[in-house]
Image 1: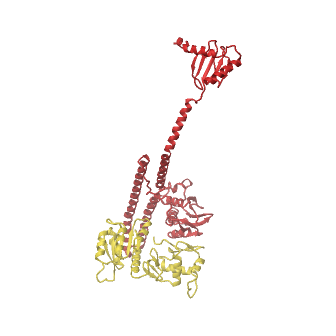
Image 2: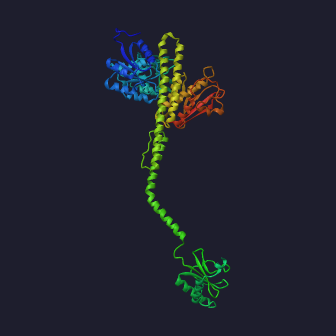
Image 3: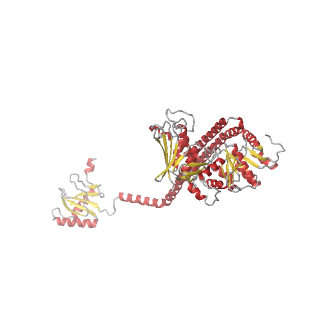
Length: 238
Length: 394
């Protein structure tokens, strides 16, 4: 799985984390997904590497032996616009806000699902490559709803749904955590052009589920509330 | 000595002679005697009473003198109420009792008056000091209360160099120390969280690296174990963080039914009922629902054919009511309060060795923080019914 020089297309990632075993495993995992990962064990080493070489993205741990990840992030941001994904295990909800305010592009809490790390990495790389702005992407765990490109992705992979279904998904996702009745959904979708044959919301929902749920029979993202309507889960893939 | 006492000094005899000469004879009419006594009273400004030799009052002028008792009467000064009085036996056997008219009240009054004056002077002089002191103590109290209210950065201004200033200084030192300790505690927890979660992250990545080489069931169970440990760490951190924060940090509208449905879905359960919005901290409310569902699933069965766990949300008056019922063995009535205590385990209950022991304690804490309450009741047909009431948002 080791990258070779011929793999010029492989995106170069710098991972700054003092846990070399974890870093080694992430290196293997992401290597298998086509990334070239370089590991730095300390903040200083990471900075030095960033000066010498160019990377497409940085995975930065919040707690480093010689530096505070937040300070380092701020420092990197001041000199470069390389996408930064923060890794942390602090577990205070405020960390997320802080991490993003100081210029990190995304944030992931340890322990993380490697697939999600990969998906988020792809997302920040895509944004850097002129993709949709961060504010136009709704992210729920491994699920990504790209409002700009009007596509939906799981683990960074596009899933096919119709444009009406996309509109329905968006209406639900933008109101995540709220119960929406079928009537309310129909109302919200009034402006959308209906497809050739009109079908009930339920049918569209099951199509969307087939596209985005791991197990459409046991939905985790779009939930049915019997006799009431639907709710789009706010906290997914935990 | 007694002889000495009884002997009348000579000057008193002279006084008696003179006084006797000034007064009419003892057999003169009472009116004359009265006039003479009044004249004396005016001239000498003495209260005067004249008694017969047998003790009967003949004439009196001014305020009534002290009670005259013939038995105890003798010439000389006597101390008594209203000041000292002088008793004199005239040569003809009559008694004259004279007391200087009290132009000045008695000394007790003067002492009291002087004391009062001093007190007033002190009060006037001390008023600004006392008022300043009061204000400073008030500020100190406010500082102490702010600290008690959870604002660990609370400090008070140190003014002056007296005891209050010393107290303020020592308060500031204590507050500083408390803040340091709490910060250290937080840092320790953050570090513990980091140290515990790093190996979990490794396990998680390792499981993914196994890929197709591992049995999907093993991989799934590994994933669940990682998630469970992660949750345990989360609960311990949350419990300790909540101890330090007395009030809710966030108030956002939360659809309780949607939240319940979301949490229930993780256990392949459905929530039923009405959509009710409560105002509060979504993360905490999620923890509340999750702990109840987790608890029901863990102790309430549902897997071995005992009937499923049910989750419902309804509105009752101004309250949002969340109920999670199971069909497990239930909780004996005597223990239904105690199971909300941290680390309380049911007596004789199967020790599964799982759970942080904080789950229900957090449920109660979070419910109360939102102005609600949590209770454990008996479910119909056996099992437990956990009921959480929260004020519904308007």
